[in-house]
Image (tube, rainbow, N blue to C red; front, side, top):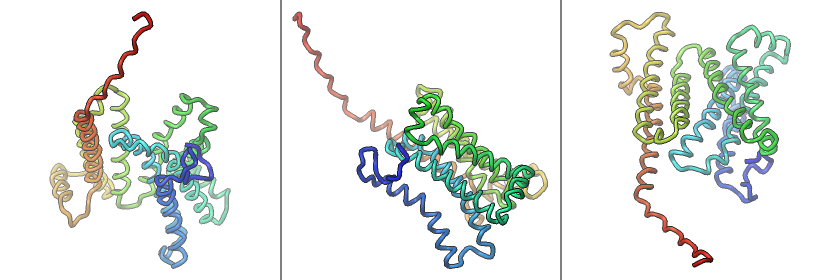
Length: 298
């Protein structure tokens, strides 16, 4: 996909419903922020709220770009590949806005901003992630793909995995109290990395039973991480009887949906998509073989 001004058109120049919907989704957070600013719906610290929103959406779209591969392969949604780069570039744009708004919040004092980034670890990590996104965004076009070559381009864009990890660390570090949300993102990221490890194994590694096991593993790790996080934020280690208590809390709807459940549900959904795709392949009639052309000697 070539990133051009006509983002709503496909390679042939035709209007693409998928691209139009994707573009609308990517622009919606910015439009909503402008609307909320105009009506005074951003709370007592509107600039701080927009800073947090832009960073949150940068991470969401980065995760969405990583989710394209499993959805395309297991669900058969091949056309999602057309908008993956668009989603990745949007992640960089929101991350850049995140930094730019922080600079405005510091009254455009670039010396202070540089000092803060150098002295505060979570800001340093976030800035490194932004630099990585900038490198990926600058090469997200067909011209750079041709210049770098397919192999080097793919190797460069695998940096997205490390960038996502840095962004998650940044999110955890700047979250003051409830870490359920960063734990959810971390669980989804762990599942997507597990999927890629299975994909690299080749063969029948992506069969639906293995994807189901991956879902159970990622969901279980997310539940465990959520339980540990609750006790770490409380400032004391968990007692031996805490995990049974947490299990009861995770099943209590009055306490909200714990992050392990969405991770488990997402993994199971992909496993079911793969199972359905495998069933369709088995039930599909065999393709007729083309007749072999008679040789000139016959």
